[in-house]
Image (cartoon, rainbow, N blue to C red; front, side, top):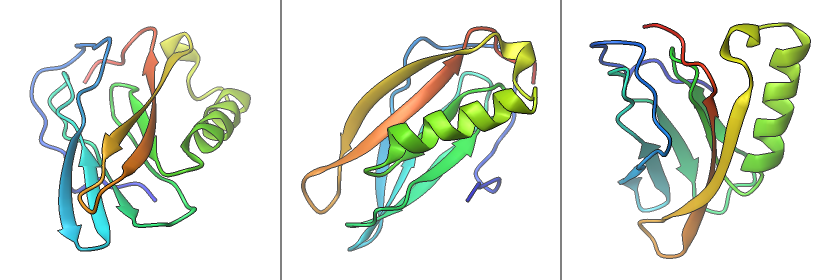
Length: 122
């Protein structure tokens, strides 16, 4: 599921080489994983503790992130589907990064994100 309600736009066209994620506890079993994008948006995803499902958001500039234990496979599938439809021809492919963030309840939440080689203008 994609979330549009956390976007605050300003500026545009900026790109990053790394994303610093912010984790907030929404409930004892749910976390919000978000970041402040260089384009001005604040993309966010929600993760339910022990869920096998990934959540994702694709920012207007092209950055995309998935959270959850299947984040890498889901991101790969998502980007392959978009490539098939020609939706990301303008960004020149993605540089993929894998990491994890600390969960509010202990342990970690896998995060995988793709940074476009050419960011879209805001």
